[in-house]
Image 1 (cartoon, rainbow, N blue to C red):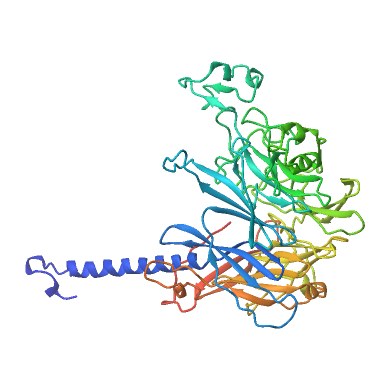
Image 2: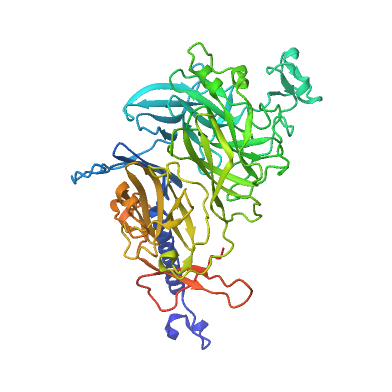
Length: 604
C-alpha cells in the first residue's frame, strides 16, 4: 500500500484502501460465502432418504427422496431394481428411476406381491367450476398382477373420515389381511358438525351444544356456533409436524367390493362427539388369522396417563399401549356387494377390545412372525414398561404368542427377548463391540414391516449403536443378539452406518453409507443370512445412490460434496460417576486450503 492510493489531501501517514480495494475484498467475501452455500446445497442434494423398500418376485422396489434446492421442495423417485434371487448369475440391467407424482401419497404392496394399493389425492371440480384448494378426494387404486393391471378405484367417503394418515414412521400405517381382500388404514376422525350463528340452516337440524353430545338427537344435527369452540369445531392436535392430526381412527376397506367400514370396538368405544380427550390409534396390523387387528393407542385423555395432546414429533415418551380388536363381522359385512359402505351396527357386532400391554407405559410397533407351529405365531413389539421422560430412550423387545385357532393373544405367555440397557457393559469379545462400544440397548423407533426370517426364529432391525446405525439379528427363542456384519461399498464396514429394510424368504435388503458417501443398497441371500453365525456375510451391491438432483442452477449432480473425511472419536468423561465413552464424529475436507479450519460443533 503506497500513498498513491489516496488523494494528497487525505494523506495523514496512514494508508487507507480506495473504493476499488474495498470492493475487491467484499467480492472475495461474497464469493467465499457463495462457495460455502454451494457446497452445503450440494451435500443436501446428495443425501439419500430411502423408504418403502421391499422385495417381491425378484424385484426390489424402493422410494428415494431428495431435496431440490432450486425449487425448495422434496422430490421422490421410484426405483425398481431386478435381483438375482434365483442365482442365475445373469447380468441384470437396472432401469432408471421414475419420479413419483405428488398426488401419490402411499404405495402398499401385499405379501404375495400380486396386489399393490396406491393412495392417490386428486383434485375434483364441482359442477363445472374451477378446482379449489379443498376440492380433493382420496382414492385407493388397486393394482393386480404384480402391479400391471388397474383392477379397481375406490373413492374414500368424506363423510366417514378425514385425511388419511400416511406417516408410517409414527402414527400412520397400512396392513393387508392374510387373504389380501381387506386393507386396514389410519385416518382422521370426522369432527362434530358445526354451523355459524349467522348461517341459514334448518333449526330442526341444529343444536345449541350447551348440553354436550346428548343435545344432538341425530348425527345430522350441527352445533350452532361450535366451529371455533374447543372440543367441538376445534381440538388439540399433536403439535409440530402433526398440526391437524388430532383424533386418529382405524378403518377397513374391502378391495373387491370397495366398501369402507370404521372399526368402532376400540378403547373409548365409538368416536366421541368431541375433539378433546380420548385416544389416537395407529400402526395397525392384521393378525395371522385375519379376524383381528392389533394397533397402538396413544392416550390423549381417555386412559388417564396423558390429559393433553402434547407434541409428538421426536417425542417417543408419550404414553401408548397395544390393543387388539376383532373385525370378523365387519369384514364379512364389507365383503357383501349389498353393503353400502359398512354400517355402524356391523362394526359394533364384533366383540370388544383387549389391551395386550396393560402394565407398560410405552408399547408400539407390533409385528407377526410366520407360523412357528400349527396355528401358533409370535407377535414381537417394542416396549418400555416404566417409560422415560426424555424425548427418546432405550426400548425392550418383547414377544407374545398368538393362537390362530383360538384367534387370540396368549398374554400370559409373554417373553422378554431384549432387556433395557442402562449402560453398555464391558465385554472382552471383539465381536461384541462396534466402534469400541458394547451393545448399548435398542434405540429403535420402528421395526421393519418385513422383519422376520422365513422360519420365524430371528427378527431383524436397525438400531443406533454409538454414532452409527447397525443392523442386528435377535433370536426369538433366547433373545441372543448378533450384529449383522456385511460389506457393501465401504472400505471399513466397522465405521459405516448399516441398515436393514426388509427380510423375505428370498433374502434381506440392506444399505451402507458413510459421511460423504451416499448409501449403497445391497442384497443378502437367505442362505447367507442363515449361515452368518456372527461372521461377515456376503452382500451383493445392487445400486449406489448417487446424487440425482443438481445442487443449484448451473451445476451438475456430479459436483456433490462427497470429498470429505471423517473420524469417530471415543471420549471418556474425566469426571462424574458415568464412565461410558461418548462418541463424536469429526468431519473435515480432504484437501483443506489452510491449516486452521473453523469448527462447527453440534452437541446432542
